[in-house]
Length: 66
Image (cartoon, rainbow, N blue to C red; front, side, top):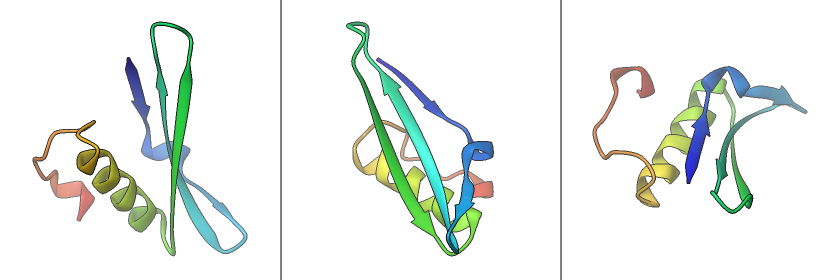
């Protein structure tokens, strides 16, 4: 499985920022995860937290996520 996350994908839609992560499997299946926030930074932080909770990202804290 490959996981794609990029903070430049975070966009504003109707007064909310939406962050996105996409995963592709070797079998051609894919899944997307979205989180929202009042700011792009909040949406990105929520997404990273959700990915860590699902054990798709390391548990270490990166200083830019705060």
